[in-house]
Amino acid sequence: MARAFAEIAFTPAVLDIQNQQGSASSYAKFLTPDADRGDQLGEAEAEFISDRDGFYQATVSESGWPYVQFRGGPAGFLKILDGKTIAYADFRGNRQYVSAGNLTGNDRVSLILMDYPNRRRLKIWGRAKLVENQDNPDLLAKLQIEGYRGLPERAVVISVEAFDWNCPQHIPQRLTLPELEPYLAGMRDQISSLTDENRILKAELGQSND
Figure 1 (tube, rainbow, N blue to C red):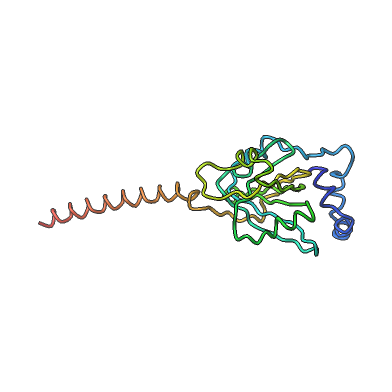
Figure 2 (figure 1 turned 30 degrees about the horizontal axis):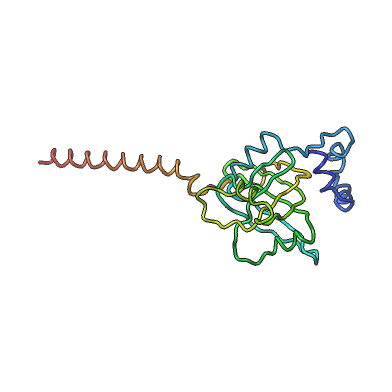
């Protein structure tokens, strides 16, 4: 955990409950001036982000309600522009524009990126800016994924303010079909081998009975 995360997440109300529950002393060191700030994405974060094919994104409406949406695309559609900036092409969906509308009133955004097979989770806090296609076509071209059928309407550029890696304690292990394929391929090979072996044994048994 880094100081940038603690400064955002540990509000007075959160600190009050930590005091009540006896965990405040464990986290106090992350709020000290000499604690690592941890607001620059490094190689580990860049590699993790580039492997993801989706993430959960939270924004806040004008009425104060949170809105959480799953954003999906080809692996690597969330791009790292530099150590403090990430961006993605906002592909056309159901055209409700709830997240886009929320961000015009409150630019705060939070992302949760999941790696279910390895039970890893990265949380990112930042401030988002919407960039329309006509305002920066070069940026949209950079964010577009070759061969992907999605139509990018705009870019979402996020200035990272903090991030944090979570422990795997309560993360279930899940695999997508592509992630499961190596295991299925091995099982199919084994079944095929056993089927051939069974057929040969049956043939040999039939010959011995003759």
